[in-house]
Image 1 (cartoon, rainbow, N blue to C red):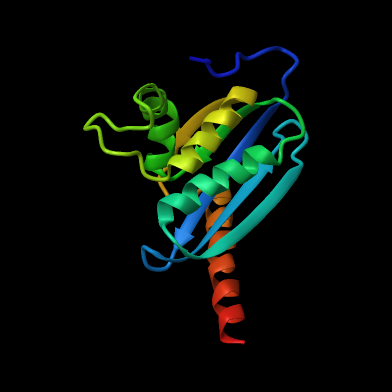
Image 2: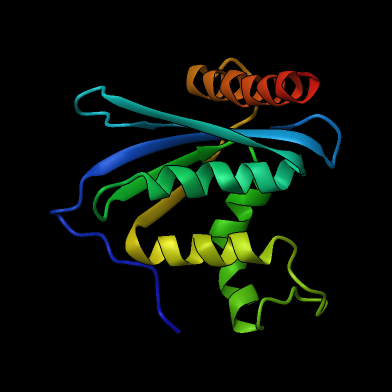
Length: 161
């Protein structure tokens, strides 16, 4: 089994704030991220959505898209209000992978293709997941939430044209 990449002094450190949103579950959904260099304060924002999806898929896609936007291997503090995403990355993914993408009860892991992509990305980057309480005044989390909800609004507007 390949282990996640090891930190090195030459890896840049970045913060990745993420959020996913869904109206209905399933329903139209949006994801968003803010990739931030704390040394310079520079930010890169990204967002998108899907017409029929789940909240968990949007949470995972926000992390995947943020990690994919990195130009070189980095040390990344991933800040999310999704316990599913944070516990998946910090506690569950290695066991799922070892069991052939099965949970402890032998049932298939939901969103397997997204978890496989996250596993691939964490081999490139040193991912440090951190959970925060959502809708609790955290400025970056609130911004990501507004962006993700904005994607849902855009999807709804496009479907009514």
